[in-house]
Amino acid sequence: MTAGEQARESELATALARLSERLAAACAAAGRRREDVELLPVTKYFPAGDTAALYRLGLRAFGESREPEASRKVAEFASHIDDPSVRWHMIGRLQRNKVRSVARWAHVVHSVDSLRLADALDSAAQADRSTPLEVFVQVSLDDDPARGGVAAAELSALAERVAAAEHLRLRGLMAIPPLEWEAERAFARLTQLQQQFVRHFPAATDLSAGMSGDLEQAVKYGSTCVRVGTALMGPRPLISQ
Ligand SMILES: *Cc1c(COP(=O)(O)O)cnc(C)c1O
Image (cartoon, rainbow, N blue to C red; front, side, top):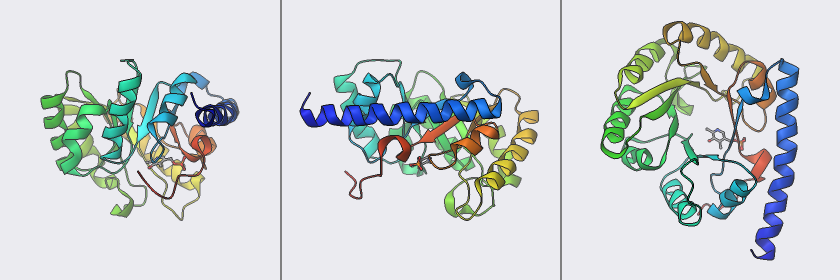
């Protein structure tokens, strides 16, 4: 390892220790068990070397949001670290023309928000995978399609489609708070939607919610997976690779 790589790894170790404490405190404050909330590090825009450093620090799942950056990074990571227990999550908006490549590397997709996307992922998973692709349906909290997410009124139909798809496995709901909303308001709305949702889909109890700025509120409202970028990796580089 170069001195630069060593310095970066110790920086990540410090940030991870701080973040782990923060998450443990959030769980304690919410009266929840730490093991019931997955910490998903979001490594988008950062090099594969950072992901390898996080692996050495004990992390085994990583969130990516863009193609072809993600495909390249997964391949580079795999050329150095051969560990089938590593799991990759696609958390960003997904275009249908990227579905084939995403189905090859992702174990979990958090951003399914249309019937057409669900159908395309099901076909891609059939063609390219031996195990079902795990899916969170992304729901819009303000019914504004700009930030992604299916409108609340169309959530059930979409989840039915995912649940019925042979090569997909419905895990639960994902949401991103609308920009101008308080986190509390957003996650309260999400919990309300989730309560109806799990009545129809009792096996799909996972909730992907919470990022660097609002993970405490997300944990308070029942998140089972927080997606954390900045608080672990530092500010994202302006120039993408
Ligand atoms: C980038 C990203 C995150 C991480 O955001 P931070 O605020 O940097 O923690 C979480 N979720 C999604 C969907 C993202 O695109």
